Length: 243
Image (tube, rainbow, N blue to C red; front, top):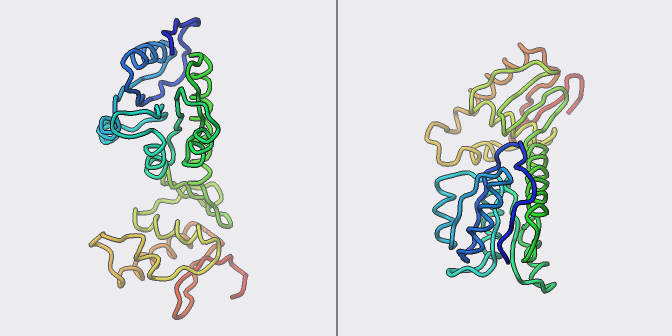
């Protein structure tokens, strides 16, 4: 990859946080200068170890991963990061262009694959596009509804027919499980598993959380109600429906 000369003024877009995992110092320097000029905030890492150190300190919108790294490869790193960072766009940048490598990269969760050498503007455009797609996918995954109940796990908001409903943290998490089930029954064990490791949650406190939720839903004028399924668990039900 040869040094790149910026050919357009920096775009006044939101400053995306980018992690560049690249061990070639010339490429890292040149690419870093170009991406900063294009309006990105860039953090370099020359190895997988350095990448993990940066990820422990910061959140990133986009990650650019080279394949050949001194302590591993970008494909394996991509596989791990896709699980731990589902909302981050991951692009592989590599001189390797064989079909097997490209297909494997996509199979382990890469959002895009750029073959070196590449143009700075094309890379910038793909980074912004993949970031937008990841944002949209995350919002869709976090936004769920049942009847007139709308919930957003990312923003931790709840509304009934457009009117905001204030819930405590535990109440929110229990209601999210119920809404996510879409009217199917969830067990007490599933609710307990949601709070695994939280010493403040015991089996006997589930009834208290559900009681508070029932009252708040009723006070908000919700048509939805929480129904106990004897010996099994709980589910959401629309008023007027039958078991």
